[in-house]
Image (cartoon, rainbow, N blue to C red; front, side, top):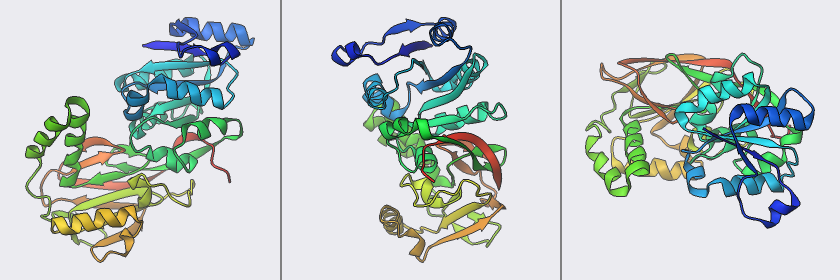
Length: 329
């Protein structure tokens, strides 16, 4: 694990992007406490260095956004991998961090938020992933600089979520054979395009079999998406209204039956017209179940691929995570 203490100065504006100091966690916390004259750290940023956009832009984008936001105080930047996020978050909070920024994707912020649940320490989701859907839900946008500039006026709010069996999600969960495309995406990220295309061979043959059924209507469908609030947030396009106190799940389902309808659905999603399609349907409920004709249900929970057996229960979860929102009321 690497920890940088970043403090923008006039000299740093003219020099290269090298960090001011490289320290271990204990030294970092003690140094800040001594310089600020306090025993706690107001704000630190936990960076998942394996997240999508951070791997592309690196540290320069984050430091530039911090500089433009006028963050004159010393802000610890703690770098770790996705598997280390849980432990690093608890470690920082136990050393006095009062608010923890998380630069990464939806899964990164979800991991940290759940790790700190019950500790009354809000997280500030920062866009560092591919879709950054949680940032859209919390802030109304996914602009890193804009989020940091709004830090001074940000307010802590309780974010509602959902449960897919025992797994918590804050943005959305999707179910059905189509979720197996996540395997192809991850293969492309790790091994390149050609290896990812080769992963298509592992996809199941029942993509259009219509085996999924919801308890609400028992209609056959090929894909089910559940989200606290609005399903639109699951597509990474944001939503006009963000209702934090929402304690119900909206579930969208589609019976694709062929490649043509799949392409039509994709276009309708981009133009926000998918709700008007004849082969899509939505329900709002606090609880519903999903079955797959006795087959294994494949799902993505905030981007994390999971298997749920042959039966799945979806439930609303109030006060799922404490977040710091820069969205204006």
